[in-house]
Length: 300
Image (cartoon, rainbow, N blue to C red; front, side, top):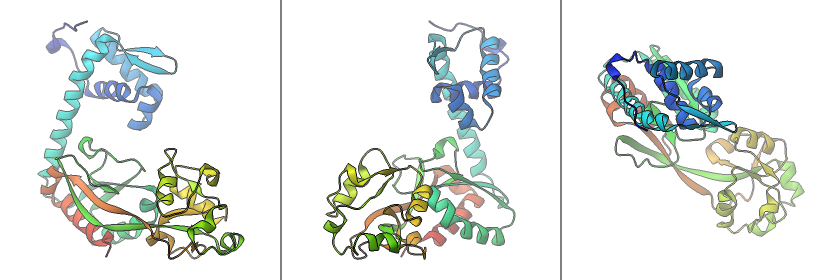
């Protein structure tokens, strides 16, 4: 089906179009409402309003989700192009700004946002009180091209050509447990001694177990009776003596309630990258904060 109408005669509301775009990409009104930070009824009214203005049906309900109609599919391509254009306009305008004062959005994982960033942001605010900081806490990579954040701290180097990145250093992830739990294990001294230990899993893919087994631990699924995708929940479980967890040694070594398990075991290493959009390099505010974070987070 081809949408045939005089677009010049349509009173087009970008807010409604954005509601349609995010709903289409998220697959449900509830997920789209969370992504946009608005209530589901408000989002639903915007989508309904767009359908009424255009005189077409955009979605069909399938179970608890939504599927696009042929008209919705055709419209999606046009609205997606509009969204990309709006993002480029925003990036260009921000990139040309020479003012230090203003808002900056920084994306980081739970542990880094909770432990590493607060003292750094406090120092930044003393130096530049005109800068307002928004911290996006997410264990998933924020999409900088869609302005989900201005700067992101990531554990991988971006491949997108329109992003710039600077390697801060390498982080070492080590095993931790409470002294009581280590005593319960009989003070292990070699990887094989952990064959009956309990670990806290952080993903369903098996990557954590695979990574630990490269160090000679020989673990199976039976060694992972606890599962959470939250690093903060994992760390609290470790502190309560429930099992062994893994964390950046920079953070783990600073916690007096836990100890390294197999202190001489080779750590799992991963890089730390500071990432921003290339067009933001001309913004004094973004550049200043980017360079400040790079210096403060630098790992020797």
